[in-house]
Image (cartoon, rainbow, N blue to C red):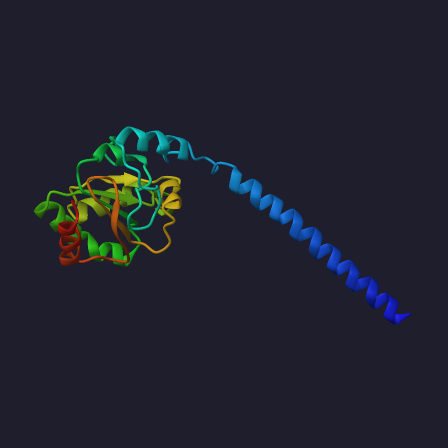
Length: 201
């Protein structure tokens, strides 16, 4: 009798595990097919990237690895302007993700400002605004460090999610063709910034 009950329990557990596996796989597939929630117009869709590739003649695949075309985005600055990455084609760009509460971000900011002053580089410093207490905190940070390069607000961390940002700061060095030539996890110093800048077209 005990043996029969044990077999029934094992069969029941196996059936439940199988049921759970099948339905969670279906949910995952549906989520993968669905566009990200609240994606708005900030991140260029795959269809738009395809048309952009046709327009520019660049056959590089959109992605986050060195050699990939950097995913496009469109964000507002602290000054109320709007900047789109793809509009900076023909120029070298440093895309940096940061926050005021991040000690390594604070450490690298003076070097970024010096780099911006010394070299013909566009710096897009994307603040993870959703993680900040308020906009005044960012403004005070910018004033304290006397930053003159554009500070972009990623208010819903949509761009950070698209770039799969985990540690901050994270930096992507993008060449004049929009191709990622280098990426850094953690703070960069001035010499490394210059070294990677000089390798890019």
